[in-house]
Length: 210
Image 1 (cartoon, helix red, strand yellow):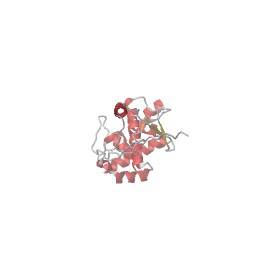
Image 2 (tube, rainbow, N blue to C red):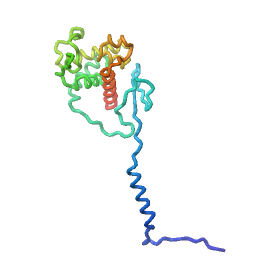
Image 3 (cartoon, rainbow, N blue to C red):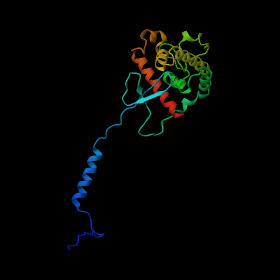
Image 4 (cartoon, rainbow, N blue to C red):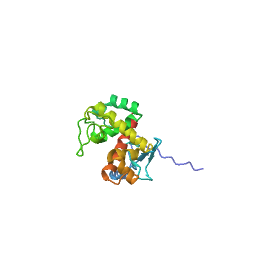
């Protein structure tokens, strides 16, 4: 009966040079080969406040999310963004508007600069137009507490007017409710559409930081 042949490699032996070189070449080529990018994630917030995420948006209500769903590095944080948290929290409780939404509007409107004045004359942290001062009892638009309370009150009014549709409420905050009513949707203005996307993106980020 023939015994099976068994090959034993002695400790001092090395692998053949050619296969090793071939493996190195393959590794180098693999390192230089571009990887497929992860798909972008989009989201929208419905009238009930529910978040809907998708990498295949099915309507123009979806906006890009800044959340990293494939890795979770710490987000860059601006200390100035926390300066008015106590005032925002108080206004949120008084008028029933989400703290993160108020903060997202302030970020988009003034980047937390209480002395900001737009080319159109909007003033303060939440960029309130002088025509709205009396209606929302705003006496000093550059006073952070007054401005945030007035802006939050106006934002609440718009959310109720558009039956919790944040997209329309934010569009109205930017372009005016008359314009939104005329189009019965987010107006086809680059500024307004970009504004809604920015606020919702900030809102998404702030909501998931808490």
